[in-house]
Image 1 (cartoon, rainbow, N blue to C red):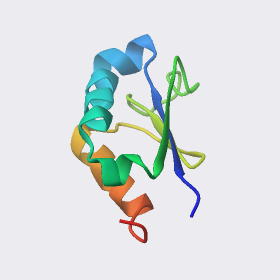
Image 2 (tube, rainbow, N blue to C red):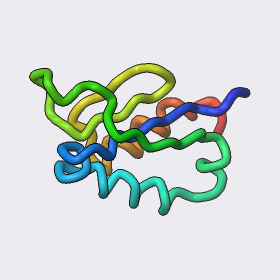
Image 3 (cartoon, rainbow, N blue to C red):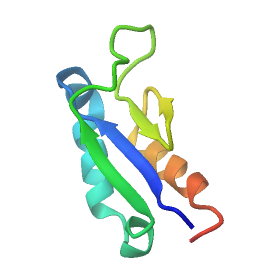
Length: 84
């Protein structure tokens, strides 16, 4: 199975609004989950001028707004439900 592509926005607005915490979540994930992720960080996903609230992520090409630590874990587990 291909790895899940996860991009986390760490631009100023996203970073201040929780993006920094999302990085911490990724660093604390167990190895059996991390090995199935391609994680990258972006200075901007181009979403900050819309009506949706930061922080933003992109998972397998789908953008998600207002991501919290708990919702990030849930989103990752949903993407990996057939793997782990």
